[in-house]
Length: 363
Image 1 (cartoon, helix red, strand yellow):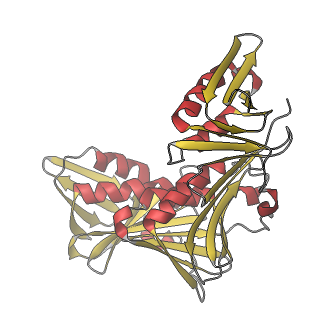
Image 2: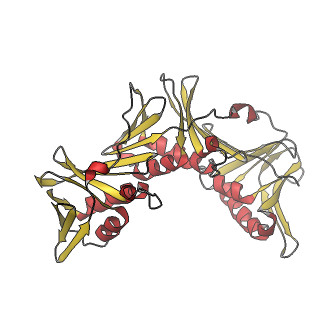
């Protein structure tokens, strides 16, 4: 292999791909990136056996070849090079890297042992505009669980209901759902949240659409010059729709920035109580009150004026409330709930496509 590539293009591709390479694997080859010439371009690939990510970059190819080299070392090295043209020359299992006055040799491994993800058999396809998919993933993925004891909840569900594609995630303490696009394609995919986070990193809003191909076991996302393939999670996702209340006894509509500010402050006082705060709606005063009490530290009470309906209070996790407030776009936010043990809905009153539910804490 003998190729020339710009530092900017190589560095950007490595930033995306190298994250997938596993540094904890007992297979040394999984610590490496596959560098391969393909169709007069350079293809970088990495996998941890569950997720595979590859990206093509424009290259001047003098000689074809392929080699795997340590992902972390290669990424860190290229990121510190000046913005110039880089020459990559393969000699057996070594890669010689030259850029201006920099000359380095990286020891690699033959590409023959690099694992290849099985191809998708008779794929079904769906296309989603990148702006829509990116926003949906940003508003949903953080609600997925990180507890491997319940693998199904570590996934993000892409599901078609009544000709609409929904993306949802839950960790059983909170639920986020986003309506993305209308589609006639029947889709029900359970994608690992780690794959969704990698997908978020490679999505560029200028790319147009994300092409999604899938069979019963795998999903492939194609975004411009990048491809991400991941295994689906086995299992039945919970029927979360029945958890979403449609009528509420208590509501409060306030400015989002005000609620975010007082919740962050309240969270400071509730650290020893696992972030527990009390939200109270008072229809007489037209105020939403956020209160936290910590026996060792003190207490905090903040009031926000707004439009209210009904009177009541509910206990919830301040971090969960902060998380959802940070992904809402509008200036106003609405908090809706019934009894103390019923789920609380946090939403933008002008954006019906996004729903977020937080389960209450026992007061």
